[in-house]
Length: 442
Image 1: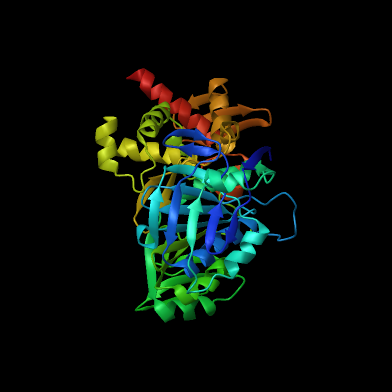
Image 2 (image 1 turned 90 degrees about the horizontal axis):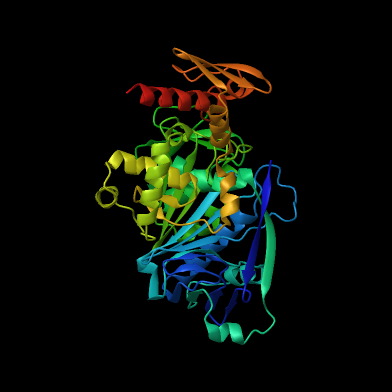
């Protein structure tokens, strides 16, 4: 597993003093261009206690290793924040790669001034975490995302620098979870105290399935129609401190009941956890969309669509199709490409993409699609030989036989996963060559 290093530099540490929460920012991108320490928002959070508790939850996920949770120095990564104009979105991804968290502070919870739109990292340090935990229901909270010059100049010598590893698997997972979420639908909902009882009654370990039963959510020990798979329910732990503020709980899942997402509606905000299919299994190896990305057309479309994005809180497919001059289905495929590159997120509640840019060095983003990159190298090297609906792919480990009809292969990857984690590099390479052959024959 390859690993890059990300350097964070903050002009000062984030702090919470006398009800004023100042979140220091590191390098990122804004509408005004690349920024060393962007300033996005300053104003009042009208619901201080749930906002502080949910922000602490996002920070807790960034610290967590749900699989093999032994201490591992150097894994602490700062949350990502995006200002979409009418809302702030805080995101984090667990060190084990299996849990994604997001807090959406919506317009109803914010009253202040937006200086710019964009994405950056924010410093969440140990003293700040302790201070957030002490915020009460009647405490005022003024939030600044990005420190103003006055604050910075009064903290001479307080520059904060961090260097953390960004493993390829972690980077890919953080990006790809958005694509997986876009294939989910709402499968159940509970209101108020029913949500509290349900979450507190879940087992901590094992595997269960959850389905809507009348007005309740019912837990099963096997998959049933309409159920959502919930592996290692203790991974929902950061929801529990928020239950006293919860208005409702929504459950999302795909048709195959693999991954799941759990969304708490709070006053003026939403807190969402998306879980991988197994406690030990991260999102980085899912690969379900790689076939859609293995064409030059999608890459070119993504370049066009990407240039039209302006940190919108909700990307309207029809409007974007008109602006890009391409059909809606090609825009959707381009958004898939942009999602895997970390350039768009997905809001389950609104069933829509939103624009954000993961604030990592461009060289690191190259690591996001190694399986597809290896497939293209095989295709370009002439390693693929087509024989009707079959293909032979020559590799250093020997010849692999691929079926273009069902996507099967004689490699170990296919025998281990049987297509459940997307096509292997050999199948991808064969399909790339097959598409090119069709284009030439036209």
